[in-house]
Every structure is written in structure tokens, then in C-alpha cells.
Length: 341
Image (tube, rainbow, N blue to C red; front, top):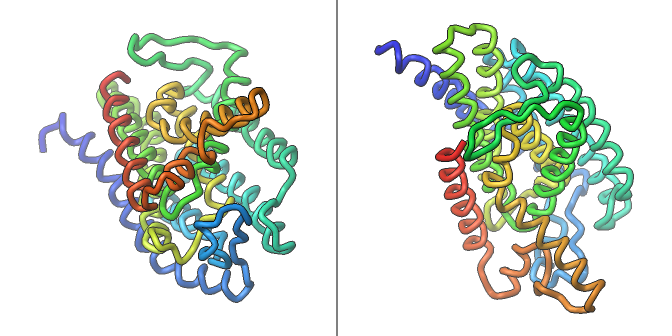
């Protein structure tokens, strides 16, 4: 094989083998997780004012464990443990998943739609984000420098990096959480997002191979494994979550996915491009913020219901079409991001 193509095939192959492995692990694991949730009567409680979702009452939740476990197994099985960056990303993935699980557990235990109090969720997410930011700042590859899209220059943020990284974690985790409102929506959008950052890490892997930096290659290889494994794990979850869903990821999955999305954005040194690759997560956040502010100021609603996907649903669009739109919009935004990164 041509020496110039070998690193490309190696990096892409790493993602592919992790994705395939995680998919099959998830497919084996899913029936057990769904069955356990049914036996525990861990069903989703639907808000009383969401009439179009009444038929989803009682569908097993906490399905995020399917891709959490499958992705972790696949990542570690192929040497992800050799990369400190990958291990920290996995730790963030799991920590946010545990926060989400506690939220789900309270909802299930007390048969209500609200779990942890807002300040409890924010403080726990904040603690994990601070630890991840401290690691990133001390890592030789990441540091406190970020890349500015379009211009391609580096910005040494110094101490500003820490609050910036924390904001990225809080915004991304809650953006994914807000997007998890329709069958297959968060998982589809999240899969495309991970593929998007997979392309960015693959480019960094090729540059490390060209420079002969073996240590950096090992670090980036771990991240490629992590990204590929999440895509595969989400694929297995989607098999059971696509309309009509037989399991929901719950906050267990949405917060875990959001934490992972933030971690890969920060560790890539290209966190600003997450605004583009994660455009639909941004739309979810902005639609809620706009709805709340306008209603408080003018007692009027901009959207029929926020987040935006519920507005589309009330406009008469089928869940499957909304999911397809979100996935396609994320894919187009990702293609643009690859051109300007």
C-alpha cells in the first residue's frame, strides 16, 4: 500500500472496527437491558400536556446503557486504554451517564417527569466539566489553545480556557438532552455529530503520522476508537429506538451523549466548530431560550412548543420526517465544517 494512504486506512479502519464491534455488542445487550427495565417497571412518564405522546407512556427508559456499555467495551477492547485522552473521554461519558441515571431513577421511583433538581444536575455536570477542562489544559496535544475556524489560526486562551470549556460542556450536554424528545432524534443527530468529529480527528491523526509523532498517534487513535464505538453503539440503540420506539435512552443516554460530544469538541482543539456540526443541538437550546424570554417579556410564544422539534411536530410533520431533517441538516453542516476547519 502507498505510504501516504496507509495512515488514512489505519485511522478509518480503527473507527470502522470499533463501530462494528460496538454495534454487535449493543445488539446482544439491548434485549437484556430492555427486559430488565420492563421487569423493574422503569417506564417513561409522559408530560400531561404532550397529547401526541400519550401512547409512549410506560415505554422502558434508561436505554442509554445499551450504547454506554457497548461503546465502552468496543473502545477498550481495541486498545483505547492506551490513550489518556480516550480514557478521560470515556470517564466523562460514564460520569454524565451516571448523572442522567440518577435523574431517571428518581423519575421512575416517584412516577414523575422531573428527576434531579436543576441545580443538582448543573452542579454535578459542572464538577465533571471542571475536571475534564483541567486535564485538557495539561495535555500536550490539547492545552489551552483552540483553532479558529475559517482563518485557521490558533488562539492561546490562557485562563479563559477553563470557563470556556465548562460552558461547552454545560451547553452541549443540555443541548443533546433537549433534543432527545422524539423517537430516534438524539441518537441520529448524535451519530452524525460523532462522524463529523471523527473526520477532524482523522485529519489530526494523518498529520501526526506525517510528522512521525508516535505518542500523539496513539492518543488520537484512542479518540478514533471512542468516536467509532459511539457511532456503532448508537446504531444498535437506534435499532430499538427508531419510530416506533421500544426503548428510550432517558437522561442516562442523553447526558452521556452530550458529555461525550463536549469532550470530543474540547479535545479536538476545534471546539468552536461544534456550533456548526452540532447545529441542531444549538437550535434546540436557542428555541427554548427564545421561547422563555419572549413569553416573559411579551406573554407570547414564538413557537407552538419548544424545543423546535415539538414545534415541527405540532405543525403536522411526522416524527420520522423530523428525524430525517435533523440528520440531514447535521450532515450538511458537517460537510461545511470539514471545508472550513
